Image (tube, rainbow over all chains, first blue to last red; front, side, top):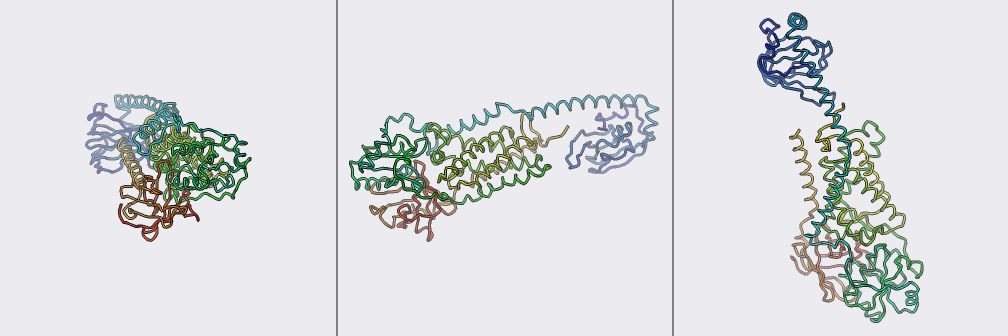
Length: 477
Length: 126
């Protein structure tokens, strides 16, 4: 730094006799008087006007150091040290300066110990201030990289509270734990017993799963009554039961770990007054015991995702950026990743946030969640996506947000891979209102998003409000 | 610095508002009305479908009424039932015919058989 921030008259106080020095120059507002890096030739005293002292990086990022008014001086540091100019000076308004050559300045210093002492004091002051600033910056940087449990509790807590509160007022609300407190116990039937009834044609077998699962594989001659379409299809089902034999036992079976399909359907049938309803005891064993009808699984039907679908392809670009070290580590890439992930997660969250029941049935399809966890997960996950997405977008606690989004992606990848390997005819459930196919492309897109989270975690330092406070751009020390 | 932060926050806020508004769906007025299934469902009875402009609707089959909500998105009608089913309905002939996919699996078209129900409009408005 090479400027003094002194009140008017500082130059005279330091022993300068302005009338005996250099020559007067007029500088218009906006003109650059001294440029950082150039060789020093003059020392300046401000007679009138105001100037700005600043540093500038190669990519034109400016840091304001100080503003000087009439009576202050600048340009002495480079003359004393013999180094190139350490900062630039620009006139903020029309200014009149006394321009003193290096030779005159040296002579002045030799003859004026008061000025020399003042400059030494000034330089020493800057050195101490510089050390303090360095320490502040180091502390800031260290804090910036710190992760805290508070960040996670904040984001997850906010998501949970919002999901529970909104669910109370949501017309499409769902119970926190499905079936909790339902005293309508459905009797179970052992496989061998059910098989005997099947052989003797004493029972009607009802497949409670979605039609895609039914089409893929079902007990031969079983009827499909998907639990989600119960209200709409029950009148026809009732008609069919009446035709087949009213007194026959209805054996309901499903195929998911959560038992949401079979037990739910059996309960609904009971509520409608059907008496002889039982569920198969071992929910997934029927395929090994009963004769089955099966069809090779095709890809589940899907609709276009529109804009969200286009957005979702962009994470694949990370695979390209990874091979360019300069870009790979760029904080600008972090901002790109943040905005993109936020847009994806927020738009996906909004599409399903008000209809948790729809999403819950998608969760059931993946067959990875126990019954008690399905609704909780379905309520909290979209809010988690929204809250964490907003934190990423606004640059708040981005490292913690990136780890949470990354964790979600890991869960999604596990679910998708499991569905693909087991040939499940399901839709992704990622976007509420349209079905998205579950395939290896989807896994790759999620892997791209996971890599983006890692990039943000490691290199995000631009427009960040973190534990060290807000920084527009990271400054290297 | 504070001004920059404010500007960034405003811009990002507008993005979020855009995303929220973008998810609100399209106008329902074109498809609001009363519809009847072309054939008796499973050979038994006709289905009456009422789509009201306020987003509510009813499905009446064999005297049983089921209420639902509906939205229009990307030219298709999405019917949401209370238990969580989504029925994708594809309008044709300017909304005079509706083809409802009863698989509940977001099938883009209608599979043959009873899983596809064709409705014809009997009354405009809802």
